[in-house]
Image (tube, rainbow, N blue to C red; front, side):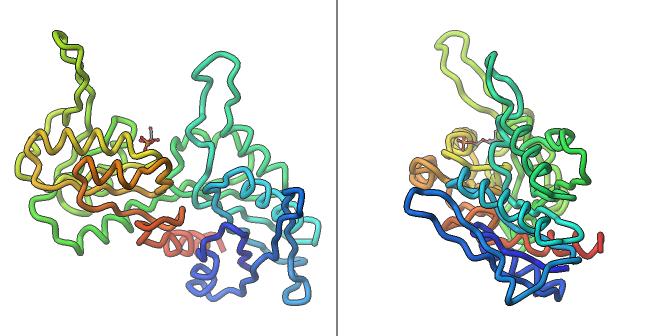
Length: 295
Ligand code: R5P
């Protein structure tokens, strides 16, 4: 098995290679003056023909560029004679456009996944995809791994006082449950409630009393930070002593960090599927464990 690091592998490729004791190679890449992407396998360093090749490339911004580089890397691995090509995409961009919210829209996640398969992937692996069901469009073996255990282990070490886990919406309840199980705490999700008289929208934990607790809000993605900020404000208004925001993919666009701080969140913790100032937990272990299992 040869681990190949794409331009957006964020060093996860090197960590995996070390953990499973496999050779690794980093793709050469550049942008042509007109903006087109270029990748090259350094064939003088390593011969991938007849090998199982694991291409690691996350799809954080600029997503379109990283996506095209991934397609070029997968397709070229096949061209160069790889026996099996495994696409490891820690953060899958476009996963939130998983249905037609408005008539005529592209179901982007389907297009992206089908393109990865068509480019030559024989197996697809990702982490905390927005909706696991999206993977059903693939006809190759696939796996959605989770970083929640790694995040929970980190939280456990922090020894927070009186912690409770909240999902910022019902969709993230599975993540909250997983983290709560490891921390041995209660969990709940937040619902939006509209005041009939004033029309004001506020968010409340469905049934849990958070007064005096350290509320740990867990989600798959923080993008603009709007979802987390609302959940944090609601927790503090309900008497939480502190709010910690935890996610797998910290995109942090449009001044998200400022928004999160202003909402009263005291700490943000994320994985390295997306590089950011808060990406402290590596997903390499989770990926290495899975690769060991399928070898
Ligand atoms: C939505 O269902 C997702 O799980 C996230 O809650 C959402 O995408 C986060 O986006 P933002 O940070 O922009 O609110």
